[in-house]
Length: 274
Image 1: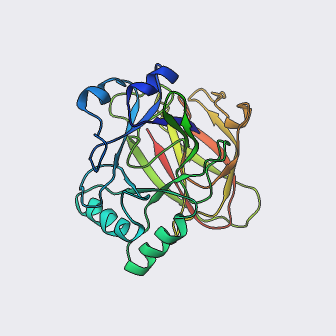
Image 2 (image 1 turned 60 degrees about the horizontal axis):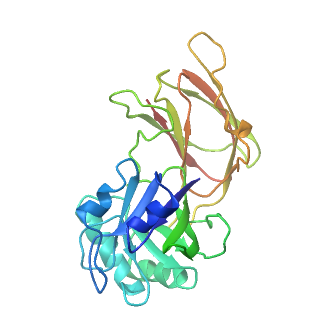
């Protein structure tokens, strides 16, 4: 998981982190001014998440659903509009108490559920099941909010995002549907490119209510072209959480094949990235 900062005043983020990995800011106005081009330029190396307050704004990754901004009933129309404009992964931001109302609005209006960024304010960097991000700290000095974000955020991260330098032209090579033979521990062998951008993205399926059933990814044993291990087993990372309720990317630079251990009760997808 990753840390993301958002703020009304963009420069406040730099007082907390000089080189943030992800930042989020507003692109339209109701009362407060949106971020300017100069504000966004403060973060040349960060992944940038664009938030809109008005459901009539055909822009942005995220619709802000809270008092004074968009309403739950307006969220499905905004998501449908963004998809018609070519953005496949609209996101709704709301708090826990509003979340059921937003889900109900999508179901009532017959609109495909969005991804969710949930304000939990628990102080714990945990993403609730069915969400892609959680805002767990609010109004932190000097005037920022802090969220924890899934390792891969569709529509925000490029398909080739990785902790390792990517080769030119890195792209999704193959999408595999995995149907587990049982709900216990299983292993699937994956063929990769062997390049520095080699990776897999594990994608639990999100149902019509915007929720993914938990699944688990354990050891990933990867080998190179000389039949020697290349490392990068996530289970060797301190604090690794093998429970997944959203998409996650595993960088495996140099791997030509890998054995991925998993437990899942329902089918899911794996993207093999070159």
